[in-house]
Image 1 (cartoon, rainbow, N blue to C red):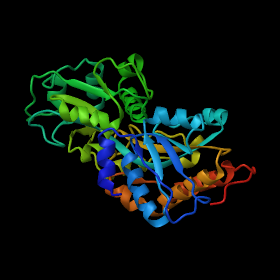
Image 2: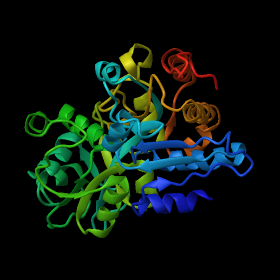
Image 3: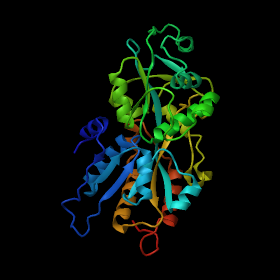
Image 4: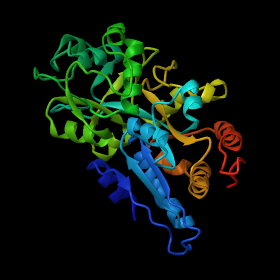
Length: 353
């Protein structure tokens, strides 16, 4: 199994990376790692799963169904782990007997399909982006867009808005950003994994939004950066919190992530949108793993923790290749302490992996 078929499958809308127990393992020792949730980290999870299978013989069954679906499945205990870009607050974690931690960070980018406009040529700021998704800025040559883009030939065509139709952590982080930069957005729509969109066409998953933007002239959407790259979509630059123009690239995502105070984040609940700093990308986000504090299947949960431990130790290069930002080693240490104290097997003792 290679990375490229996995990514092509994901971007075409498939939901899972199939897992089989290694032929080198006995049936008695085989444990399936099953997970479901966010599409935001699917490209890197697929890459890690491929590499981990080669070294361990264990493979991952991950259904990229959106953060909302991942939260529902882990609460129902139908998967070993859930994955979400919308973190759960500490009281909700305690109520449902769950623990979460950040696995990797990345950037959410506006993507457009406007004839003659090249990647990075278009510039948007938060208030204008909010007005586009509110349906108040309706055409590409609107004065609000033209003012930000002197010298760029913008058509008089109407803007076709594309947004997520499913419960989405990408949507949560995107709307959280819009709520911070636009009082109108906050009062009229707000932030959540699913909102009542004023305008636009809905699509399922990051891959669905990417496909719809690619196929629809004069459209705009929002996706995790890896999906923009894999689909060769035109992305926009942004004016950030400090009023500086920034491009969506790993250095800008890392600059925003540098402000994260994970040590004082209860239950690792932390959002990274609209961070200060001249180089910070304004729509940066973390993606989280969620597991029960009292696991249902000791073997599967132990196998999952081994995988996550391996990814932290060996997955940074692959993450950077796909323009994700690895978690700092200090954060990984905090996460492992959480595993040791919060995740317990059927005997009531911490899982040993």
